[in-house]
Length: 270
Image (cartoon, rainbow, N blue to C red; front, side, top):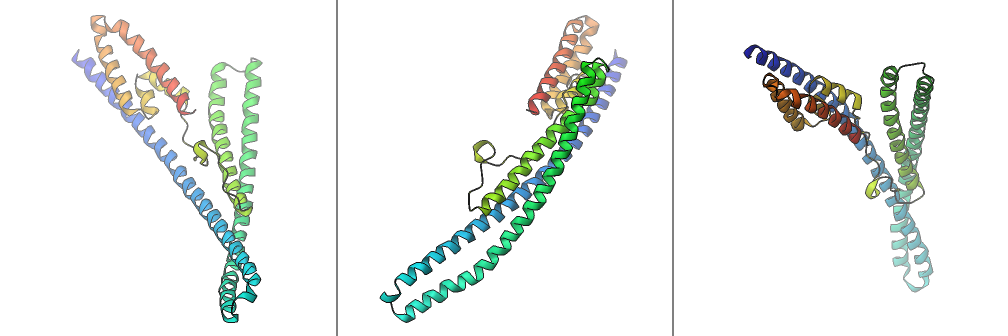
């Protein structure tokens, strides 16, 4: 009994350390792009806001100059010249600055459009590959296991590329709206632009991990506490096999762990 307990403990520790390493790698991959995209989006918003603010300021000053000319005969020459010089000086400084910002906006739009074209092209190729595997599977040319193994990464890639495409479109719309002196268009819930792509969870991976030991799939899905609780419950159930109670509880927990991990991974991916 003690020997079995030691073997169980070693197995538990090895699997737990493996899944923690995988979890840390996934978190690193998900956090890197997120910070970069947030910075880029903030830069576009700031640039667009600066353009709109300066554009409207110039329009207001030009309107003041027009109104000033209408009242020229009602005020002194000194007062007229003073106000005219003040407004003209502002315009002489602001208009070149506005032109520079507009040039920067145009350059960025060109860059984002080219980037988006590359994303769309890659997305199209990925979707073609998925359809190809669909046809092979429907024709019975490949097994279900081969089909799932081939399409799982392709579908994950397709979803990520589609999110990147929408995100890139949002960046372009923000700058185009600024050029047209419009407020940025609402894209996401609450009128906010869509957030950067998050790391997707593979339901198959979560299920397979739970197949080897209950709780590993939950940890893969970033449910660390839930995964540890599942592991403890499953370990107790395995230990109770010797007194026959575990013969009932162990298969039930095993199946429950796989189903829960699979459903949770799908829910995370939306």
